[in-house]
Image (cartoon, rainbow, N blue to C red; front, side, top):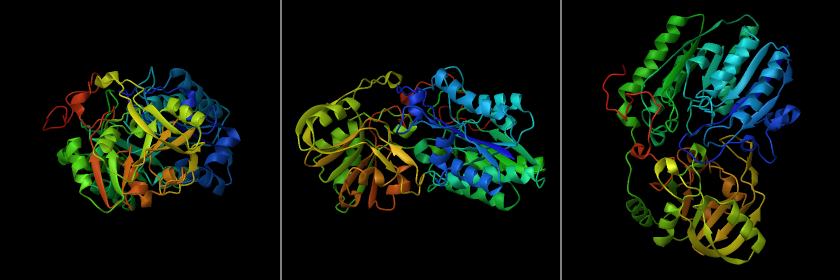
Amino acid sequence: MRVVIAMMKHETNTFSPVPTPLGRFAKGQPEPYYGKDAFDAFKGTGTAMGAFIELAEAAGAEIVTPVAASAPPSKEVEDKAYEHIAKLICDAVAEGCDAVLLDLHGAMVTESLEDGEGTLLKRLRAIDPTVPIGVSFDMHTNLYPEIAEHATVLAGYQTYPHIDNYETGMRAGKPIFAMLKGEVKPVIAWDNRPMLPHVMRQGTDDFPNREIQARCKEMEQQGALTATFFVGFPHADISLAGSSAVVVTDSDPDLAKKYVDELLDMAWQNREAFVYKIEPLAESLARAKEIKDGPVVLLDHFDNSASGGTMDTTTVLRGIIEAGLESVAAFAIFDPASVQEMIAAGVGAKVTLKLGGKMDMPSIGKTGEPLEVSGTVRVITNGQYRNRGPASKGVLMDMGPTVVLDTGKVEIVVVSRHQEPNDLNAFYSVGIDPLSKRYLMLKSRIHYRAGFKPIAKAIIECAGTGVCTSDYSQLTFKRVRRPVYPLDLINEPG
């Protein structure tokens, strides 16, 4: 038995100015992982690809891993990068295989394609119309027909923050191996609703996604092979951005369709709960200042790199400094030039520099606003660490050359590669104990909850500046289908 296992992941924010060349899909090296390096990088990790490898090894299969490519969210993927990765996967399948297992995201837009994943699956089907294809997807998948039509089994994350990557790989992979044994005959049903849930209201700790995902798990206990509700990724101005559902059953298309309708009805009936209400920054920081026991998370959620943010806006950091908050650790400001300037100065040096604000954001009519800041260079590292979990346990994270700048009141982590803080090792790796701080400024939206919610005494959501804005009025949607809720206040899904 020969099984092809590959990873191609990118969540595309079409409002982002951050480029997405091939090098963005790499960690600790110039290009993605290929061949044995891909296998070694993800074997034994808490990822869907790690689960696929485990299942294939248990089946005694010959495993082929042509590529493992994962990039932080940013603007449309360069066509050259997409074609390079896709060709590696297609070429491996063209050599012949008994099954294909893919760790994809589901919201990849390229310079030429609205649906990168569906196009890949369509190409694979042209190579081999019958090979079983199992796919693991992110909860933020923007589902297109080609995805459901060309996959044999698909499963999406049921947690946000995503701490069930490995489990989702198992859910997508086990039916494929059962199918190879002649034990099941998977059938897929899918549909969508015209709604764009705000990311800040998508967490599975919160109503209504908590209840919807619980129902997905119940369906799998009641006979579905997989049941998935995708919240969708609203910062993609593409026609089918938004919520959808997919259910896979064993030879029962009617049950699959019934379950899909039920999940989508649950979401639509509670659509108002998916709308985020924004608090002015000054009010948020005033509330934070009254809290005496820390750590208090100050969430800079308009500029989350894991949603395509530049990670270099300074609105919230400036507010923290001007408010006089003390014992603060901030993760992070993306500013490779300032990192190099501080590396040249050396540990212990006192520096004054214009931090952040290097990238303009024309999609929201904003220019970069650097923040002049003075402090001491405390730490210089290569920026690499492994997550302790529960999110992506054991996976290498790469911030690039990284510096900690200490102003006396605020320790600012300054990075050269985008990295969302979803794990305590983001701080420990640069010599900061997050438990010792009164405030932790995090450029994140929901994923921070995996590592930081258990230690937070309070969480203050801070509206700053960035292309991950939760204020849809700042975004110009041109291609998304209309009407769509809440851009349009519609009462029927159509």
